Length: 237
Image (cartoon, rainbow, N blue to C red; front, side):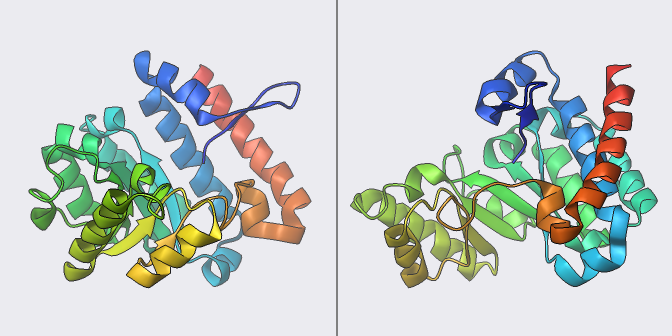
């Protein structure tokens, strides 16, 4: 979950800067910074990553999906980094897919041949959720948090979660519930046999370096900061 750290150490949440970045068409540059920074951090110790990591998810914005150069860029970055494609999962929102269906379909098909996985994010809030899903080769469905957060109190939300999960399971697509904020929600999801849960009750955000390298964080962070500084200079120029 992307954050901006101010010079005084304050953290700016994505809800505060992503809308402005989208308004001024800066999301493709942000996406590329995230991709390069993430791959560079993973590549610091490939052997350790191979032992520790199951899947690393990276969000792609709708603005990036509309860029026909994105696919070649991603292929080049993955190959150059040496990071195994099998541990990479790219998350794209349902609305972004609907708006860029041709590009999205081609991107998914090409990168899945390399071993990458794809997750359809915010699923359930789009205009035609089930109509195109049969022809879209994704590995995960992320159930939108607007259904999850009240599912134990609202029968309609519960029915939506149950329906989406059933469709996913029928199509052999794993399901992920967002906004899991308490034990009651987690237990309800377990009863529905939703595959994965994401939210503060399961785990709070922390730095990528701490998550990946733990006790080695101080050494790794200095290397990652150097990479980050180089990338920031690149994009500022």
